[in-house]
Image 1 (cartoon, helix red, strand yellow):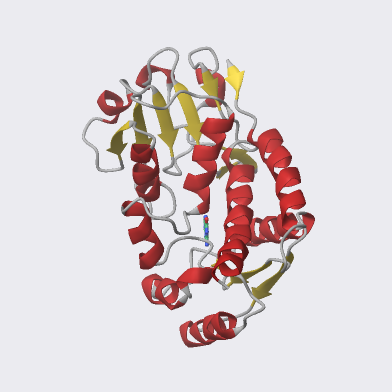
Image 2 (cartoon, protein in one colour; image 1 turned 30 degrees about the vertical axis):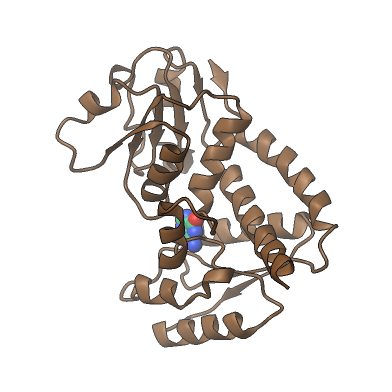
Length: 277
Ligand code: GUN
């Protein structure tokens, strides 16, 4: 089995991005907004801020006991602040918050998460806009690993706004045949068995087992599940080691590529602004 080392690839890409950041007229500035106390969310946003500073960005976390109204006000202020290039509101939001209302409020030219309806529509139309970080990172990971995509059959397990849905369009753009399976699929195994490439993004620990894939499949594991204090993916890594051609580990696979893609989006935000000035 070939291990798809997202950690090493992202580290190399960050070094190259750091050089390109030096050539910008303006230092990119990413603001990450956190409205919950979830320890996992806090660790994600801390990792994003740290990586941003490492490549030469300005970055800060705004963590507060927001109400929906005060969160919208915070977004308005960041939209108005010409010093700020990228705004990321970490999901999930607290119970009772209207996620769509919050996402809609972010200036689409600063929406480095790519979840605003404007950017999602651009993605569907194959036009230039912000592409959500995890799907963008996955495509980059596949390409950097020289995995053949054109004409191949990819099966996505999961249909979230953050991963599954944007991936459909990105993989179609790579001329793949795309199947989407999800929690209501009648016979999951029948859908996953023909996959040349399998992308698991459902958040069910060890869901993907050897009898569900064909020999030589390439697996991208997007799951980050905490089981007995340990991080595990949606794929039973140990059981699949001898079946797959290549596979990502958890942690150290998709996660670092998500962060890299977010940095690239923030860099692109500045670049687009400089190009239109
Ligand atoms: N929660 C899990 N993944 C993401 C992401 O990519 N962006 C945001 N904003 N929240 C997330």
